[in-house]
Figure 1: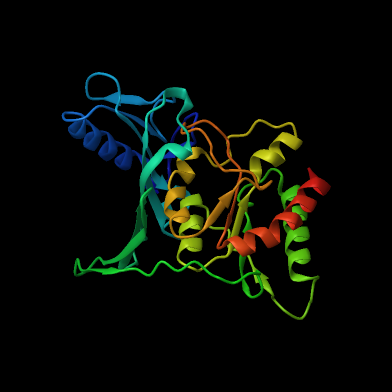
Figure 2: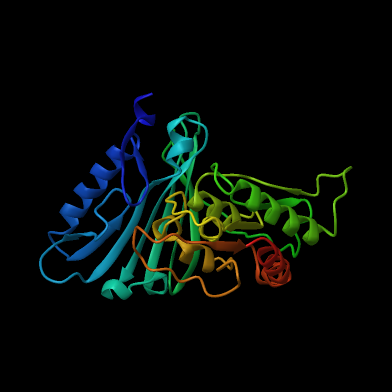
Length: 295
């Protein structure tokens, strides 16, 4: 398939045929925008130091993942997401905490008749809409993260997308889920896993109330294995964290500390997403024990 061909391997990620039209469109929009404002673009597919638009020093930083979830979308299996955020510019010190507004837009498969969009600013609650692709009519989308305080009969996932570290991740996931559920009942499917190969998509699933917990510890696992790997999430994959936080979703480092990565395209990031504070507080000691046992 033309869309699934490998075009190049960048510092950010592997770039496929499906990514190129999105990159071209992004650059074209930024060139037009740069006629009136000065800013720095950080994006997958763009040079690691970013690209300046406009004249003079940048007034803000725009960080974008044009197609988060290329692998699923290019095979027409599952939606990808376009992720974008605007942050005040602080040079190399620019971090997630500086994001002022963020928006995430679903990129649907060919058989989908609707697409979702979620957005938020630092001073406003998360909003959403569902667009009918046939009629062009948009309806408000309910923002309703789960208020359940356990994973019982819900979706809880530890990301395990690619070969490399699967044995360790599997042991950690098994320990977390079994302890959270109070042990294994072989007669019941008490918790489910959804390996959605899109960090933005996973974030959306929690925001919309479909999932309760998602954790990605690949950088920690690769460090344990003394392996340098690019098969990890990067800051652009989670640049719309503000959308989740303004909906009441909790995003932390796996160890419970503040999630505040630099807004670049090269840092490997680990994170844990919880549908609500009570669930996060309940699960943190369980996660701490599992990480200590296997990393």
